[in-house]
Length: 350
Image (cartoon, rainbow, N blue to C red; front, side):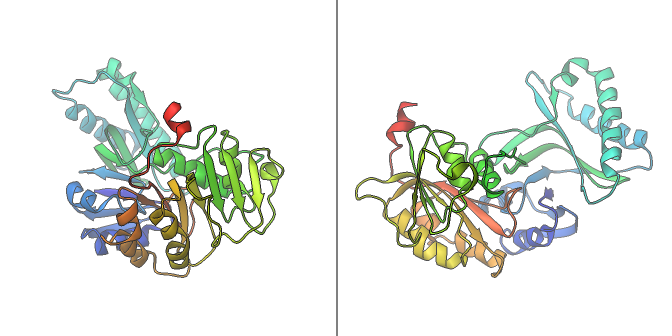
């Protein structure tokens, strides 16, 4: 299969697949890794954290001209339609490394030529095509047309893909920092977001991007940080800024928060052991979005530690997902729900 990731992290994705998932890495390039691995075996461990999209059983296509590439892709797609009923919208996703200057124009030309060929043969099905990846809590397995260029004259095409969820988010001019984009993206992956009336504890909140994100949705936010809030978070009516130590802060007894947010610039084992684990073990939150910085540790080793059967995540939040989001840098975003806690009254009544 062909796995895509954020450019610059393909070597880490290759290590993760080889060392944790047991796959064999065949080659890699900017933002992609080709591996020999069956999807069920890969999925048994969980979608690789660094992977954004997995093209299943892709076909390699080579060609010197736009028409040669478009013809091969359209033939593969049309052949795959034999005996298949298509009644609902389907994704037609064309991608390639932005690092290859001019490749975007090549992709657009091949895409247009391929779309015209498909339209001439199966106009009704062609009208159902959409350029967006499926949305919703991932990973999502989808059928359609998925094309990834690895060079100007070489691409991989698949009828099926697994979407992990990461995607580019729209910024807000009032957001205090770019970290706002990370929590917005995490909602899309988790498939749920703070609701009006829910309570959010944002530990290490300054300058307030995550607090602002929750407050603009009507949630009641306690922003814990000795540093100042800025932008739309400063003075926001829905944000209670507490100048306290995030590691010492505790919610009111018997009143768990609906959400724990944490994006601290601290060593990840310290955050996990001394902050996240107590919150999960004691049921102080129902859902959580936590970032763990891996800039000074081995990220693949950290992934292995997070996924062992006796890890805090496995014990207290089975089903939690570990991702390297589109807007992440040297960090993992961990999202999930604490086992055994009922939904909040605000969520239950929505």
